[in-house]
Image (cartoon, rainbow over the protein chains, first blue to last red):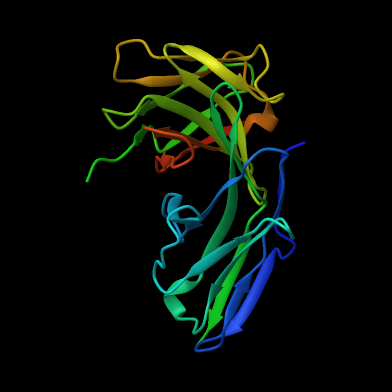
Length: 110
Length: 112
């Protein structure tokens, strides 16, 4: 079965501290993984995807197929990073759908 | 920058009433989706739509739900007879290719 898990519902870090938001997935096919972010009162927006291997707003994520993980990391947290973060898996059946993890609420303490 | 737009932003309806949530996807997108998020819970997939038909739906998307693309620009979600547990934030999304979905701002549905 396809599944995305994010073990931490809430994560609080101090400004300037490193951040790691954990994500694990279960999928028998070739995974395509994403991180979406939802700032307060704003829409869900794509933060980054593993195939592009880019860094957005200082965040990076590496797909580890052996551990079936796609953890999101940032070396120095900023207050504006406070938001809800969703790990997501694109499932290719005949068509496509995106399965979201339960989300982690990140709070950066000044 | 093109955006997915949803109307209304908030809809209050009485239990048992029909409700239609409207979405205008990004114009060159081919895949359309509805998701919902019950307060305090995760974003859940409802249905995907491609080439004028449902391509996949979840177990949540029962006979009370239907989707339509009536005029080539709008994409609607209809709930035939609303229940209290249908209260949630409903998100429309669209994409050109797989995975990278662009989301609307959501419609908050409150069933009383």
